[in-house]
Image 1: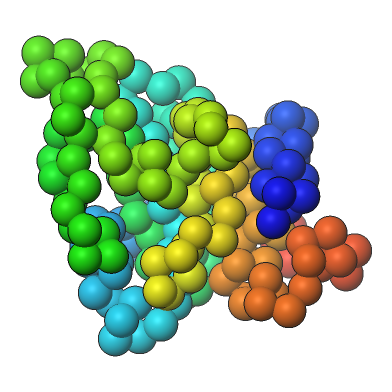
Image 2 (image 1 turned 120 degrees about the horizontal axis):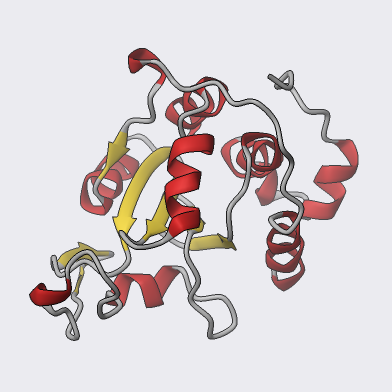
Length: 189
């Protein structure tokens, strides 16, 4: 799994410049809270894709504007995942896997700027003791972390990762072996 995290993190280092198509109203990602996604996954098992962001993070805003707005990506995510958008510095308590998690260092006077880090962020978005934004975390339907992927990715960079987890390939194949066989399905726009 560490090799997977490293390999996925390295893909974020090479940013490609390309025109992007924005999602229309019908092709927007259906974002849920973590509690809503957990309840849905218990009824109809699907993996989760969690966007762990902050309000002050520039690359987080780029991920939202350039990647999550791509209609191909939005359609795939809506079909294969429960998508969660989570503010890593939120002051709102949440329940995750039956446990109440909070942000004990949250300061309401600092909303919009850097703030304390929510306990859920530490629980799911930690990569070898490091928290970075954005981090897209993939969870199985039982809420177990499959891989946190740190950094900004374009839709084309995210496509194989989404197919790896959304198609269930992670259950029987290492990521590098999957990439050896992967053929991009999205035509560059």
